[in-house]
Length: 401
Image (cartoon, rainbow, N blue to C red):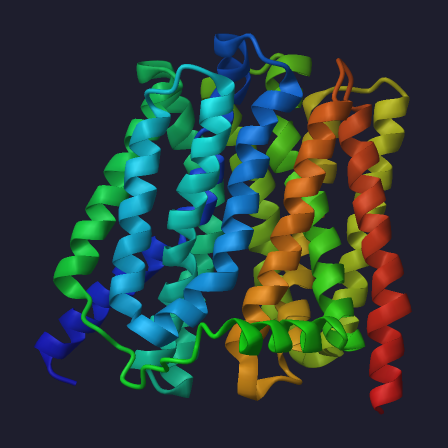
């Protein structure tokens, strides 16, 4: 590879990595401002949290469509259209006059932003051979793990300097920069356009087939409920840490950095151990660690122990457990469908994010001036993950052998 080619490849990988991180940055950057947003509009905690839940819901819905759309019209136009929508919606969020407007615009913002997450992976598959693609995907996975760790720290600084509206100006600026970079550096990578890719009957037939497959559904639901435990803190953590524990908004990001470190650590541990204990073995360890961590947190909450370590440490282990479950459940879900891996990936992501959005809305309705509701929801979702894993995944794999 020449120096020019190497430089071009590096530029594309950096760009795709940034596009892949749009989702976690958009959810986590404004977390330090979430309680302030509720106060600004005189809304309830649950209404303020709907700005997060509706973003996840929009991301889930958009995930189903960008893959087939890019198969039909090409990666570049689909990506640029999505990023323009994300940028404009982010800018509009900075000027809203009611919580209802913000909720609606966050949904639209996510419909655009998910193009970056979905199509960055598709572009990698188009550009790189199998081994190189795996290496590039690992860079993107690292960004997905680091982005939610760093975003709240930056968000705390933005909140302190510019208030909550500054978060959305920052997202709009990021969207504009990435849109411009993609238009300059990213050409069309899909050389085999499929005019029938968005044909409704074909899409519906594929989706129904996936939902009827016990192993696929089991893997997707296990991942989804595990994600629910993680999203419980993403959705309710700001209210608990800032409101119940009294931490300043600018310091919330540093605590989140520690929590997200659990996910990064879990990713490293999982990468080392999966080849020794296998996919199912790693998932088994993950779901039980998540449930155990949730139970410890709930026990401490019921005892009235609300010191920071009593909240942050159990949540960090929940994040750790999710890192063991997610990659293995994704591999297990997609493995039976090599001929429709893109559609299977979209449906699995839709299930995961839909459960996350539902859990986020539920947490908002239950929160009070204690940490009990947060950990009660975590215990519920992680317990569901354990039950689904044994009732559906293990049973389906035994039948397959």
